Image (cartoon, rainbow, N blue to C red; front, top):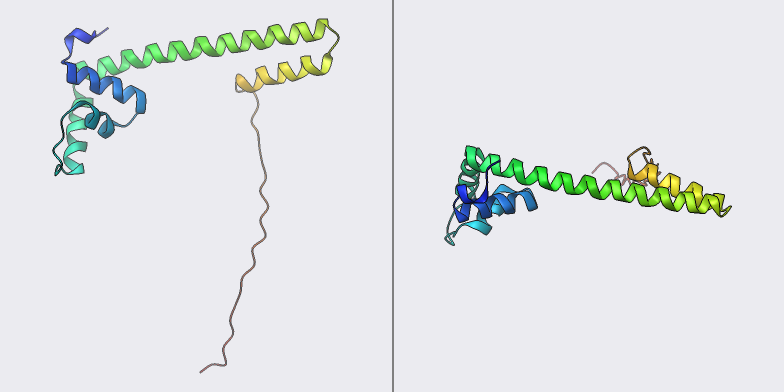
Length: 132
């Protein structure tokens, strides 16, 4: 894993900002001094060069892996908590609450897809002239 000490402070800041906001140009602006008259295309090109740099791309991958691991732990904890609530509700004879907790677990795990139908009525106004 590429550590922070391998990168310059500005490169590390770029990697950190990129992982946080997912926008290379914004990360570049946050990490490097930009002149007022600098063109957006120049910022984009410089940001792309940083993304293509092997050490920086490795650091970004490492930061993303840590973030993904933390997110999964949070999901696991959430699902476990909902399971405990479901079990307590079932033990108390509150089957409605138990079912609701189980449905919430399914939604959090991505097992349910909510579909919504939108019906819209449109009215068109047509002007008819006398052919002048």
